[in-house]
Image (cartoon, rainbow, N blue to C red; front, side, top):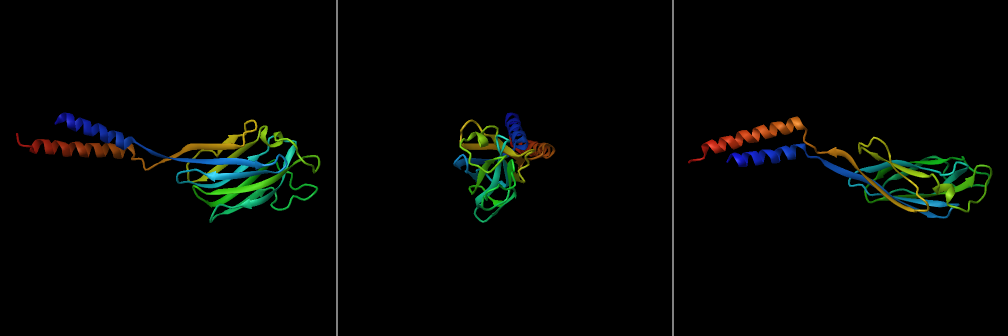
Length: 200
């Protein structure tokens, strides 16, 4: 009987200290052309919503002229802090080195997308190579209530146009160890009482 009690206690200790870490993440696909790339972001988290993000240009002598064709996640909203949203007019827009976006109700399994125009800082002109975006570029995503210390991001690598990034979120549903210890002591007392009452 004592062996059964010890085994049960060990199991309860393991359960008391266990955690259930949900996964957060996003998938990014870059399309379009070197001069007018497009970005499609999918929320691949288990439960967390995406609340925003940013894309930084690779070569700082180029800029994002504007944002076009924004498509919000289903049932949600999509807005941008920089640069301006609308037609990319001759003469350039805000000449931003990053696009900062905010999203609402961006649930797991949903996607958002947008396009941009890349110009040299010096004048309004086409860009022929992907290096302006990709060489040193980065994409980051923030999550609502996921408990992450920093945004989840990816540095662009070579001419890779598809990325998938995941990480464990803050633990949820974990039993605190003091409470777990109390559970173990209660269970041991119950097992002891049963053992004393068992006829020999």
